Image (cartoon, rainbow, N blue to C red; front, side, top):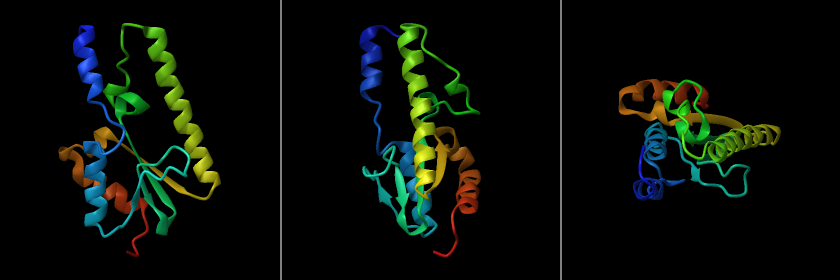
Length: 138
């Protein structure tokens, strides 16, 4: 869809931390009274948000990169260099599953929040999901 220069420009803007969806989740958590740590490198998968008091980690996943099960963005795959992208995206899915399994074995509760769940139009649903997923004794 894009020429190589435009694609390069787009890809240079993709970040792995402090993304808009991640910041929205952090603001919600903070407004609910939860305190947390960011990007714990000593845990598998470097969770985006860690609530040590509740032994809970939160991954805020991009729908395209991590394969959201309900979102159309996860179904879109690049049409150029198909083998590369298939391998890359499939490796990401496998790595995510492995990291969740290891964290759960270590006794951590794992919550995955998808980018599409952080849109302003569904903030109430996300707030309810977080509320139901985390302990309330803050």
